[in-house]
Image 1 (tube, rainbow, N blue to C red):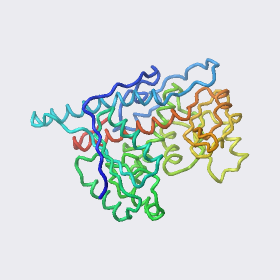
Image 2: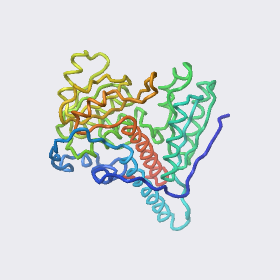
Image 3: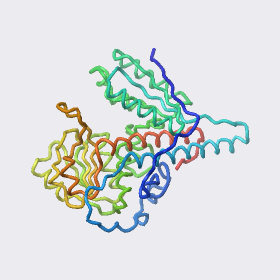
Image 4: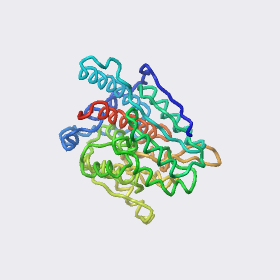
Length: 360
């Protein structure tokens, strides 16, 4: 039997300060995906590019931006609960909060840290988080059966299976496992149905990291229409959906991957006005390659064995001398991934507790 640990909060935590350019949840001040996606991303929503002040190395503060999102999500939960009270004509006085279940298999230290951060973020916005701990020797069928059970639980709005899985036997069924999660509860945004909705420009639960990256780009105030973007890395969870997010925003997108020639990678980086790197190799993108005035989003997070220091995929110290905006590692993309997980959970909650509604 899995060990079940619950974490809930009865009050909204205080969010930290947020720069004025990034205080809204999106450039249009809304939470969640829109019913009219084409309207949501239309070019007229964006203003002119801010003038270049000549300063380089502006940090894109993912912690501050995510704090603003959490604050907005806490308010959205209250709004949904008021909707439940209204539609119930007073028969429901205390609607339940959103429910997120996290499944952790094994004792991987890094996974424990990530799960703890997600639960802490849930507490801030009044999402009830339940942690189900399973031993590393859990069989594939036991894990699949647990997902089936959670799919049927009306009080569970979101399901997250923490990766990586600890054994080769479990990793062999990872794809089947992620596909087994109901698309309506797939708060990681990995289910083929949700990826298909993204490609079709339809609303759905979005892959967390790519959508979080879009918020970081929006925070710069740069108009993304026609922006020459390079995505380095083509994984199913980051690189590929990142391309789709950029296309939705009118960007001109190129992709570099493991078969890209090293000399071509340098050329592509030098030409890009926005570089998004998600490979997992420290310093794969040299700082001197960065185009003057570019936006640099570093998704990678790597621990240097000799020093224990966390670094990204981009040579930060030299890149910040050329980039106009750049994300730090840590403190850039990571907090945004968690914020988008919460956003997906609130969106799933709204559609679950208010069937037929569209939570924006």
